[in-house]
Every structure is written in C-alpha cells, then in structure tokens.
Amino acid sequence: MSELLDLFDRVEPARPAVLFEDAAMDHGAFAALAETWARRLAGMGIARGDRVALLALNRPDYPALVFACARLGAVLVPMNWRLAAGEHAYILEDSGAKLLLVERELAGPRAPRVAVLDASPWPEAAYARADDDAAPVLIVYTSGTTGRPKGAVLDQAALVANARNSWAMHDMLATDRVLTVLPMFHVGGLNIQTLPALLCGAQVIVHRRFDAGATLHAIAREKPTLTLLVPATIQALRAHPDWEAADLSCLRAVGTGSSIVPIDLIRAIHARGVPVLNVYGSTETSPIASFTTPADARRKEGSVGRAAPSCEVRIVDGEIQVRGPNVTKAYWNAPDATKAAFDGDWFKTGDMGHWDADGYLWVDERKNDMIISGGENVYPAEVEAVLTALPGIAESAVVARPDPKWGEVPVAFVVLAPGAVFAKPDLDGALARFKHPKAYFVVDRLPRNAMGKIVRYELRAQARQRGEQAQ
Image (tube, rainbow, N blue to C red):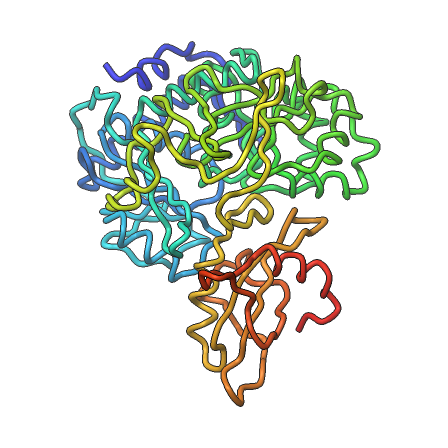
C-alpha cells in the first residue's frame, strides 16, 4: 500500500477540503475528483511510468492530479506558465511527456498529445492501482547552472516525508485553513502547505494566482490560519493601500522562504503579531529541509531554524548539504548532473551557511550564482547563452542587483563585437519575462581572475553603483 495514498484515503470525507472561486468541496468530493482524473488519464492511455505535463494556473485539479498520478503510478510534470515557448518545448521533450494537460487560456505548447483541462467529455477507463511508495510521482524542473533546466524526480515517499516536515513546522491540524496564493508549479506552492494540508484533512483556499488585494480580502473574509508568501509577495502586500488596516489576527503563522528573506519583511509581519516561519530547502528537497517554528520565529529572526524531522542537514566546507527520504534520488535523464549534485547520499545545495551557538542554521550566500527574483530562479548561464548568441554581443555576464520589489533582479554586462552599436535586445519568446535583464551595462571587458573566470562579485558591486549608466 502506498503511504501517500493511504494517508489521502484516511481523511474524513465530510471535512471541508477546497474553497475555489466561492465553490466549496469536501474531502469526499475532492477524493472523487482525484479518482475521476485517474480514470480520465487511464482513458487517455496513461499507464505506470508515463509522464503527464500540466500547464495551468492554480485550481483544485492541480493537487487532484498528483493523487491521480499516484494511483496510476504515472508522473506529473508541473510546468511554469511564466516560461517562454522554447522553454516549455524543452521540458516537454526532455521529460518525454506522453500527454500535456493545459488550461484553455494558456494553450500554445505542442506535445505528442494535448488535452484542454476544461474539455468534455473525457474518455474514462478502469486501471490497476499502483501501491509503490518508491514510484516517482513528480518531476519538477529547476534551471541548472549549465543553462538547461533539470528535472528533479520526487517519489511518493518524498512527498510523505515532506508532509510530515510541514506538519511539524506549522503544528498543522485538520482544523487549519490554508490560503494558497503561490503557484503550484513550484514545490513551494504545492508542497510546503497545500498537499500537507489535504493529507491531514485541513482545508485549502485556492487562488488562481497571487494578487495583493485579493489576498488581503481573503484573509479578512475567509479567516485562514496559515499562508505561504515569498519576499516579493510580502512586499506587494506591504505596499497595498489596505495593508495598514488589514486584520491578520486569524493567521497563526506565515511561512516564507525561497531566498535569503530580508529582515525588514519578516519584521513587518511580526509587527502585526503573526510569527513568520522561515523555511529552507530547494526543489530537490521537496522542499522542506529546515525551518523555524512559532516558538522561535521572533527569537531567531533571519535564521532558517533547525533540520526538519524527516531529514538531516550538515555543513561541509561552508556548504549546506541535506539527506533524507524527502530528497530527490536523481535528476531525470541526467546521470552526470545527478552524480555532481551528491556527496554520497548527501545532496549538495550550493548554498553557504553556518550554525549559531544554539544550533540554528543561517544561510549566508549562494555558492552558485543563481538569482532569485520574486521567488523565481534565474540562472545567469541560461540568460548569457541567449545574449551571446545575438549579433553584436561578444561576451556577457548576468548578475543580481538588489530590488525593493522583487528582492533582486538580473542585470547584464555586455562586451560588444568590434564596430557594433548596442540596442536593447528583444528576448520575448526566448526567455521568460522574469529572466530578462532589467538593465544593461556596456563595458570594454569583463573582470576575470587568474584562472580566467569572471569575477562576479565585482560586477555585482558595479551594478549597485552604476545604475545611472544603465542602457
């Protein structure tokens, strides 16, 4: 018996499960939705091991499809609707998706077979239920330093371990009401609160996408007890005209993470009497690896707490490493990348950190050069590959610059080919908008060390100082 499905099936059917666009669904109805999707997928020829890509905004079908795939032994591939068409095409090809489920308003990517989520009627078929905890259930793509996205494979056991970590982090109970406003194509929006809430019998209030006004309205009207926000969404709430008058007293806690969270954003919520639970992890760790609890949130502002109960955390040569059942076993179709990411059975996060005297973990900086803009990962190598392929650009380097709204944004330093004149490039269709450099600096050369590697910390300092020279 799969433990994931066993937990799902044990929830009391009469308990409230999902509230979506004013339509309520109890756990019995939600379980029926998952079963319907399992039969629909079977009717579309999906069987054990097949990959099913999903391109959609948040909706109850999203988590239902996780459980449907678990029943079949199939694998769900969530796709970021913010990506460009070429990026979608790569993920579909790399994952070998047999079917793409797409929301009508997002239709566009091509796949061997495409089905619109709201289409009807659907063919349905009986299926043999898969009962293997080690069966992969998610492949979640996260960009790599080589510029190509990598698919982190998460099995059912990883989702169960992560759910147990979430329950411990939030003191989550069946009486909780979770407000989900972050996109479920990320493990943050899907796995930190949403799936754990459904697995313990709690209710999830689903918003199709984040909107600051709608979020504050939902807090006032629906009285959620928990929600998850990234720095960019906290900043958007703080900037909204209704923020000062908003009553947040219904919230037992607000979870946050995805990057080094600015202390001023944490304190803005603490000032309203709500503890901020700072979670650390990555796509590869499902993602919960460590967290602060309501008891230590204020005392350890800025820390990412202690290791989650279902995993271990260590620091080797300054780098944070994680192991446990919540950690991916491999990247899809990428044995070399998988080997490089592990030290034995320890996943190397690429983040630098330290323990304080009380045994709490602090993230100091990222070992790699990843930029986190509004909760989205931007890898310089990917952007640089697009820029240097353009006529007139001989070299480029992309680094982060602090930004009051998004936390940080990518900016580009470019060296022009002889005789070329710079014109801001049009990157639509090649890169998602959040990956577009927000400023360009034309330079004669890029700073390099004795080994010929670009000295990015110099460029980051220049980006902060030379804003007025941006083109």
